[in-house]
Image (cartoon, rainbow, N blue to C red):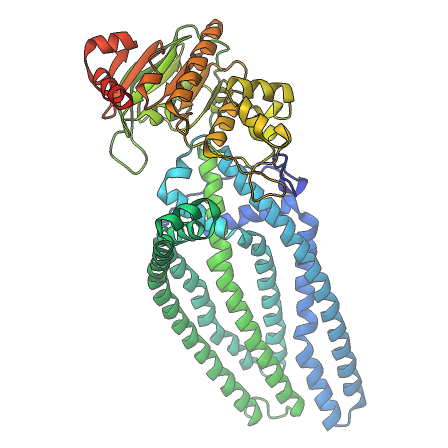
Length: 622
């Protein structure tokens, strides 16, 4: 099997768009349960109307023959004991028809629900993926509280397609309860009071999941860390380092410790709710025993015969089973299914809140350049400024190097420029136009580049590089040119089938490549767009030696000079000062602030931070 092409959505993966109607959130930060469920039901109905209606009809119809079994058995009992051929015949015929109908409806329902579940699972998985991809910023990928919510939603994505089965099953249980109540009322109206003794269990079943879920959310970071450690301990990439360092047992032990911390909070909450549910069952069980004794003693219906007692025993037993089914289904519906619906509704609202209403077009070329005007920024959830009052101009057509020690804010500067986060204060302009007034997708279509935390896209090499410009991802000429510009020609030539080689050793006929080769392919992907206005190279050669990096940066500088006609700005982010001396402008960041700006010669003459750091690195390479 080969993953040679980028994934494509199937028709089932593309439901009609539904305008999310934002609703107010509760104390948990999630939308209310019922409005959330209604939105999800609308979404599913737009996707699979026929399967949903068929499943609902089969579930309701299945309840009828099942609930009537008690009546047929009562008629058969009366027919035998009172020698009533008519009762015996009707009871036997009814029992046979009920059995056949139950079997037929069960087969129909099982096959319908299996198909419905598969299609809804595909649809919901695609919907969640699209929602996350549609958010113009990356805050939900980095903010812990959002990660916890999305992590729980991803883990319970199967619950969304089961939500409808749960709703339909709950309707089926209620229909059964209604029929059993009618049958009991034919013996004596007071027997309907048995249903009242089931209400405490239903209340507990509704309350129980809410309490358990609140506890689970509180320890979600422990669950997330335990899952991360499990991946570390059981997958190949980290496996080599863990074994060489002898850390595999420590990682496994820490995973167990995190799981124990999670269960230490969740376990007592589950036990407490279980005890309450047991008390509810004890109350209902006692009421049922009293009802049977009441009828058997002739107190409830003096004129009733043996058939009435059979009816009470069978109907009461069915009632107990139906109440148990309803309680269990309500627990799932309230605890897992509705919780998942709330989380999906929250994600829809969050994605909708990030939608932009911008009317300014991105420029076709830059005339003056890009300016950071007193820009400050702190990551959500933190008060520490990563960028503090940055006032900086990047001239059109210039090669700009951004240097500084770790944590100085270099990558954050690039993130703000790519509009992955909005500035906390100040603004960023392109030729005087605020970037916030330009649609993010349109602005990013005028950008290109490679990042230090690049993606390892395990497709055919052609697709791995070509995805840097999706409309041309299969254009061999464009991909070849990008590979050449990135200095990755030797990497492709060493692959067994060139651009047609499947990357990744876990795939059939896939090949493993080194970290440095992955980085060169990522660089080539960043060069797929021919004429970007901004080319960002954020530590793009961290896995390469200094000599190779220097040669590549010289190549970048020369190609940047040829792009001055459109005013392209090339931004190089690097720790290696010796490789950026050819830049037109060098920006030095220190302590979240821009401390020096100038050419290499100007900064060396100034004898400041840049000069000091450059001298330190020069001595290290001497």
